[in-house]
Structures are given as structure tokens and as C-alpha cells.
Length: 198
Image (cartoon, rainbow, N blue to C red; front, side, top):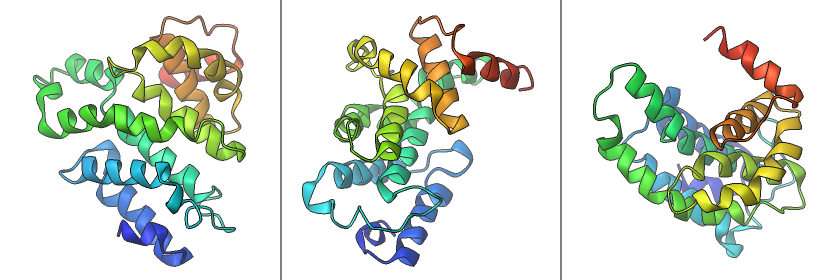
């Protein structure tokens, strides 16, 4: 399924993406193979030899293939984020952070970030935006926290005004977690309204 991602065949690539989303990150749950798949996807994005097959002229889910892969990495990183750990504790889940799958994926965050960072200045704006969206939860890693002040202006001025609501939410929640004031941002009220119904 993962090899299909570089097949160049749109049907096979879509099947590979569905495997990532349906079998390895289903309903925001991690599985035994999720970490390995995340490392594989990160390696694909970082490997210059993979770029021709990751830049087809067609799109899936209205996104370029690399943007889809970055969005999947963002989802994986979000599942092991500090926010999710806090939510687990609030719901009385004891030892969530000691789960093997959580520990494995958290240990991979620096490697995942290397691949994501290489896409931050991509000429395709959708790819660059997805990379920025993936970077936000990855910067919860203690080895990457020092990069928050570097990326905060871009998160504020680019991601928080994204046409995609999901990226706007990532931006506001990330900036708030980093101690940034988001009240002047249009998406701040949007996120607050959404959260009151959760």
C-alpha cells in the first residue's frame, strides 16, 4: 500500500492514501504500523529521488499528493500532541503517554519535522501550507520547541488565514498553546465558537 504512493497511477495512489487514513490513523487512533508508515512518508518527502513521482499533474481530494502526505503527517503528530495528552488526563485516562504507540511516534517527531521543514518554502502554496500545518503539532517535541518563535509569524500571517478551516484551527490552537495572543485574528472567534459545542 505504501509503495503505491510512488506508483504514478492515480487509482493506486488514492488507494495508498486511503490505507494511510483508514488503516493507520483511523478516527485519530494510532496502530502498531503507524510509526513506521510516518517514517516512510517522511522519507519520501525528504528524498529528492522521490520528487518526480510525488508531483503528478493530477490531484486527489483537491490537493497535490505531497500536500495530502503532509496533512497525514499533521494528523499523526496531532494525535500525540501535548493537547491530546492534556485531554486524555482530563478524561481520566491514566498512563496515556506511556502507550507504546504514543512513545514510538513521539520519538519520531524530529525525523518527521526534517521532512516537513523541507517543504515549508515549497513553490506550491498548498504544499507549503500543509507543511506549516504539520509543523505546528510537531513543535511540541522538546527538541523542537525552540523553533516556535521562528515559525510563529508564519503561522499567524499565513496559516491562520488559510482558506481551509482545519488549518485555521491548527494555527489558532497552536499559537494559543505557544503563549501567543490570537484575539485579533479573525479565526480566533471561529475556533472559540466551534469549541463551545465540543
